Figure (spheres, rainbow, N blue to C red):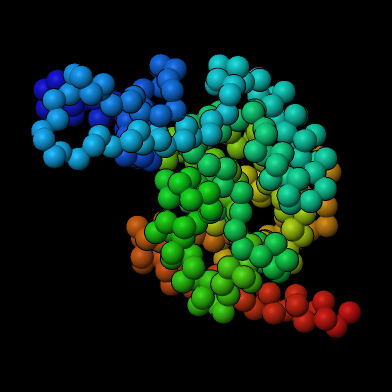
Length: 289
Ligand code: URA
């Protein structure tokens, strides 16, 4: 293969979403094979130099990554998947059940290309819940939300208002990474939304922070851009078909967007101060009565 062929092949991989090396050894997944390397050649065919070290014992191959069994072609139609998701999510009595239900859910194609389910991080008893868009490569690898560059900025933003991950709970609208970090489709959101809504119900935060326009649009059901709706309090009311007690909700710029557009950090800082103020107010209100 020439260098040009190799470059073309790499480009093809990247366009198909394969942009991250997760192991040292290339695996040919089209063949069924033993889970150990082939034994060394029999001694008769190998002419070892006198005094040479004995052949190394067979080294086990890395474990096969855990993949969902259903191929994407077998996915149920959108309506069926979304209805199925709603019934499954509603039946989850706690976060452990919700996590297990998502891990077993086969209705979203993203699961089949992701390495890990990215459920949540932080303290589920915290007063404030942050919801981002979707895991990136670092999150997919570690199985935790906001651990890459955008996550490090989010941690600094939390620290600026006296919070860390023991005092905040963090998740995403989508629990699986879209291949190549492509923008998730409306269908993918629609299918995963019942799980996020149930996630919010189970955590029951005093204050909700929506990180970026995508999570704001999905949960507030608005077509307005983040620049217009950030910095103001909105009410999250749950599933429109089963409205719940409203939760004060602040949409704010995504930390990944702030990394690319640092001039917006001043606005983001104002949002953070307002989030801190509201948290203190809600906490004081609860202690008073
Ligand atoms: N961006 C997100 O929206 N979520 C993550 O977990 C990481 C980056």
